[in-house]
Length: 265
Ligand code: ATR
Image (cartoon, rainbow, N blue to C red):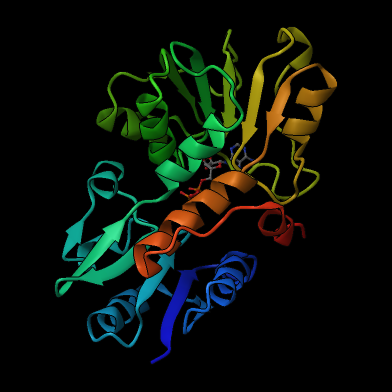
């Protein structure tokens, strides 16, 4: 019987998850189909019932529902629990489980850059849904100190309640960091700019942007121009999908150049 998988979000049009998952489904000859669905808040409970009834066999969850889905689930993985963020849902032993593969996705993408993270200073820009996952991954990698800066400081304060060891800095301030991560949505539109004085930052600092479309945001373009090392969020996206694929199909899909090139849009 063909199994059904979905990514849910709002908006959802931009999602490349169907392209990636269907590519792997075909490659590994799995009898399944993966689609995207635009949802409203009041439809979440219904779609999760479909998992319970095995009409749908797995869900990926994207903005803005990663937290909204939690009350409707029976159980959470340890990582979903600490981040309060769910991006992968499945049924196991009659329970509907929420997992978070963004943490591992971010961590693997950072590890493959071979940049030293241990004992380094990291500055995260933004306080949206993905930030707790980034903080957890950085902690696992033994980052020395994590700083957080967000336009709306109250949202940064909320995150600090869960992770008291982080330090909040004022929006617009920069400090002597080793790695800076853009986790805001600034840059999704090509003309968007973050106010950073790149000239003041010494060379060879590491700039990571969670955004991968466009592949080089202004944040990364400027960083490169002034001698920074840059990385976009493409591999984070691929690795979170790889882990979700394994949870559902018990196959670790290969991430080769063909896979990576699939996402060039
Ligand atoms: P999510 O849905 O993932 O939680 P979000 O809440 O829309 O995403 O978060 C987007 C992030 O980008 C936030 O940190 C937001 O800052 P605010 O909390 O102040 O809204 C940030 N962001 C978006 N546009 C911005 C802009 N023009 N300047 C500064 N920050 C911006």
